[in-house]
Length: 379
Image (tube, rainbow, N blue to C red; front, side):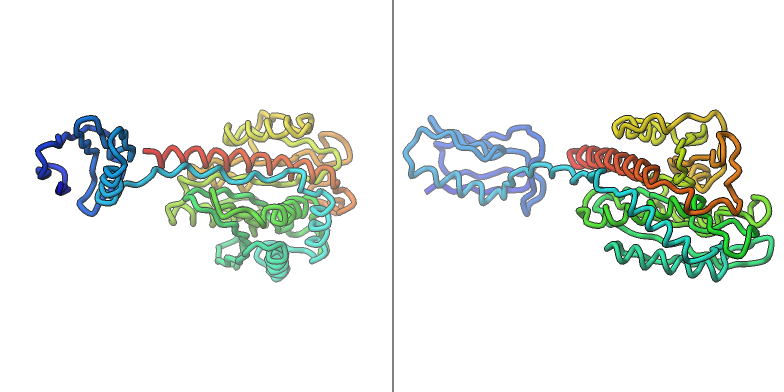
């Protein structure tokens, strides 16, 4: 009878038969036993070798000796290395429907004026949460109080959450409030109805995603518009609050942010300003090229202050997809913040271009996350 005793690394192993030779081999750790980490043991006898590290027996001896292989594997607790999981399923850009996005935009506009931090904005926030839930996306309203030039107000961000299994986070954002002081029933169809409509249609497309890869959040900011002039207490309330919240939660370093704003113009020309994250901006240009809509995107040699600014200031990569040329003729911008910003100016085709390009960028970011996760797991 041959007796084989396995001991922790560094201690002698006893083999009763003098016919067997015992030798340690220096190989990478491949598993754990109840004794701790082990490397590899090799037992040899005459014309037979058993390599525990590989779990393979090269046997030219009679079949009755094969039981040694099984017993050795059981004692050592060898594990078979798992194959890396396949990357998460890609979203299909063709599933995004510009007409449905337009329907959602019109639905939000139908809620009436939604000036930041007012009952109208609260009504709109509740509406958005219900539309997210109807699409199959978990939604929450994050209320907070901020100081404004007219005293403290309660603002409400709306967040749709699509869980993942990595620590990374992708935000796709829009603001949903309207510019104060225009008129009682100001529509704000392009600014901010168009981008909010795209996010709601994205919710429908993304709702059935696998719970793998980075978490994706669809975030609707309250209080983007200023009461008077932008300052530390006027405008960008929702984005500043949420960006700071991510910092305090320790999630800022694992977050990337996409902002959509004023993207429903019938003459769509996305103006990519020079205060965008270069990688994300390049991803959108590549997405537009693949979509056949590159002519609708141009680089702009100026900066644009928008909800993405709060994220950039906190070290979070962010890109602002905005058409800042909204008017009766190129360069006039005379529909912006006026009574002319109505739903008849919106284009389902423009919404579809932005929605499909955004999905292509999401696919690229999810694939990037999968590569990083696989690399980290292999170390």
